[in-house]
Image (cartoon, rainbow, N blue to C red; front, side, top):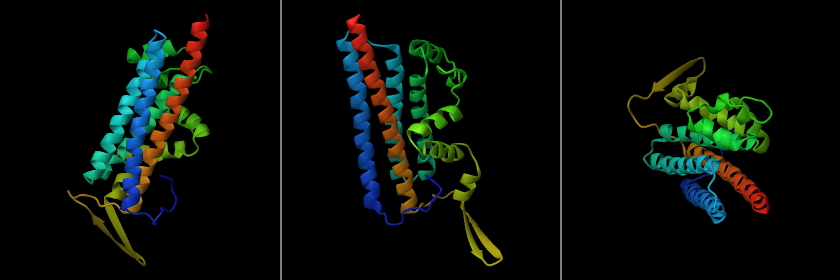
Length: 225
């Protein structure tokens, strides 16, 4: 969703392929969560931080399903809000990797404390701005996607742009405003939105794999004690 010319060499077939990739990503997210659960239960362990992780995975899969349902219903204005929510999943899971005490983090979240008020191991409050900036170091472009989609989830000039067609004619222009009708997006925009949903879901899966590997390492050390 970067501010650059959209690829016009795309078609409905490209959109269908992205949806297939989203379905495949849901299966990967689910399987990785199952792997984490299996690894822990085989060691007679089920950690509370993993409960936090499983909850994020459940939400992520539902968001991907909801995105496709809304897109198929041609309700793209609502669908694109879910990209920001998926980015939120990435930031929340990433926050778990930044704290010194994961169990304390879990307990504080379970008790209703906001992550933005919790500090990481370096003493920084984990606000959305901080987390999205840190994530941008891992996944270049994440910060821009976060900023662009934040302008969609809260009512802003982005919605006014979506709802208005402007036709310039020299020094004059005409504006066409939509009232109670479905907004038609170009296939280029649809592919762009869907691709960004896939990319942020892929980044979430990468973070989930990181958690899985960290838990495997932790359990090895636990078994050797």
